[in-house]
Amino acid sequence: MKQNFDKDYVLNTVERILNVESPTGYTKDVVEVLKKYIDELGYSHSRDQKGNLMVTIEGHDESYVRGVSAHVDTLGLMVRSISSEGHLNFTVLGGPILNTYDGEYCTVITRDQKRYRGTVLSKSPSSHVYEDATSRKRDANNMYIRLDENIKNREDVITLGINHGDIIAIDPKVEINPSGFIKSRFLDDKISVALVLGVLKYFKDNTLKPKYTTKVLFSTYEEVGHGMAHLPSDVKELLSIDMGSMGLDLACTEYDVSICAKDSSGPYDYDMVSTLIKIAQTNNLNHAVDIYPMYGSDTSAALRGGNDIKGALIGPGVHASHGMERTHIDGVLSTMSLLSDYLLEEEL
Ligand SMILES: [Zn+2]
Image 1 (cartoon, rainbow, N blue to C red):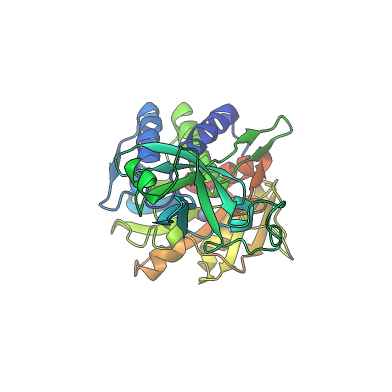
Image 2 (cartoon, rainbow, N blue to C red):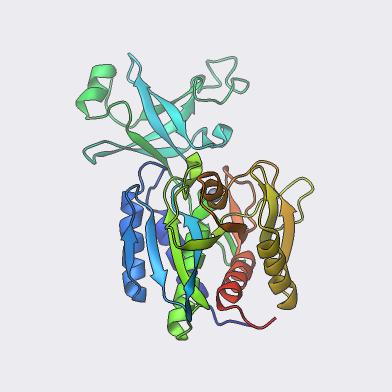
């Protein structure tokens, strides 16, 4: 079925939430913004103890409950220690490609909500001085944060209120291009959060009800593996919407919705994957079925957490994941179509 999705709503939403810092472990600001979006759509929401946000959509059939997840946490850094000259050593939050962080601007968020700007740099940052400026490894031991404050030593940094354990958020550098490309850090998985909201808006605008009662779960610890490890007990199946992998022998492009048959956590539910492929084929959606060599999703976390569910994973193709990511509006719209048709269970 051809749906009249509100493309501008999705693009405006993704731009807004990409610009709210949410490294895994510090998601409360973006969750507050999400709550406003859900309030505007007129759905009710609740939070569990670890901060996941849940929206319940009443279905025609309330005897069976489906879950749909997308994660709102991103990669980031955390202050590990402060050197005698006032440089910040860091530890990673999630698995960023640190080579791509070299030279990036960032914000240090202190426990009392002060924000300081800085730059991620190699510890051999100048080619006029360091012989190994280009060859030095870009990892957490060989990089640091240069703060844009008048500091000469460790004590000056402490005086600013910065301490070990403070969050460091990398600038996302959002660009929405007239050619349809959306490029930014952290499209994994904020593009999916935005497209899920876009599908909810489509339901609202067209007074559509999903076939089954659906719990939409915005998870907050996916990047460290345990995101949706605990599901509401009535959820019987979980469809995670997360970025589609691209590269090597994978078929997915940025114009496609990717249907994952298997990732590092093993194969996804045979029947769910088959149904998703059939919906994509029947509706002529740009799609690819792929195996992700190094990947785990909120569905993987839910299965490992011991939930008795069927699970699957789909998402728009995202290029250069965990680096400078990019996708295309066509892949986003294909993902919305597949999600919407799956929830409405249109006649095949
Ligand atoms: Zn992800």
